[in-house]
Length: 276
Image (cartoon, rainbow, N blue to C red; front, side, top):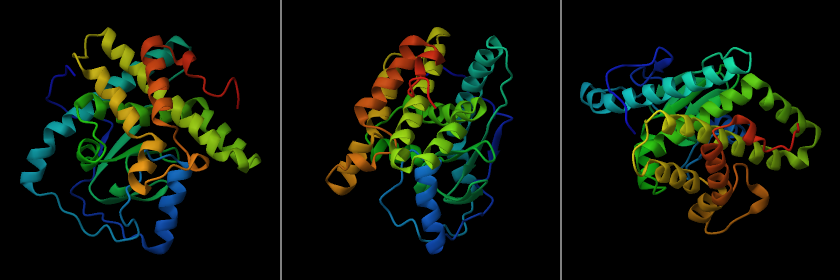
């Protein structure tokens, strides 16, 4: 991506050096699972999520090494939210910015304990995106999706959940899941695919403004494909259980990200057919 280093977003909350490791225990492990199914973290690692996060300190060397990434994350956060603020204004409504929390290993979110092993996620209860920067290393090494626009896609997807929250889509979906538990996973998939489409809408805006470089869109599509439920299940378990999907297949995630990117319109992102 084309961007200029040199600043941090006012909506960035850096907890990497706070030492807020979170011991999850059995109850916390259950909460990790609930968060993954209800609030939609993109990826849960196949590690042991019930172990303590421990006390974590950020050394000066680590801080200096990660600063370019912090500034890139800040750029994407601000750029995507400026795009959505303009879209909301054109529709006659106000956009309330989300905040992004950077943490290392573990922290506390408005939705409960958070661990890096959960992957990035959006918590609607405090309107914050939670991100352990080490996830981007996993995105490259473990999921085979390198590149700065792959990372930008992840951030834009989580901000897509914030858009859903502001428009009331997420609350209607949660109610529909309570009313029809048998359709809960299918509704979750539709929610995630819409967030992928919203990420594509921002990508379209970034391209129009000359922010993308050759290969960027391929990086985004590669990341969308890499975090498909079928790809993750096949990699972690060697088999695929369609009934347990919560985020959509690799092909579906690519399809909806591409749809948003090609249309540049949030109206093209209706994965619910007008419902819920």
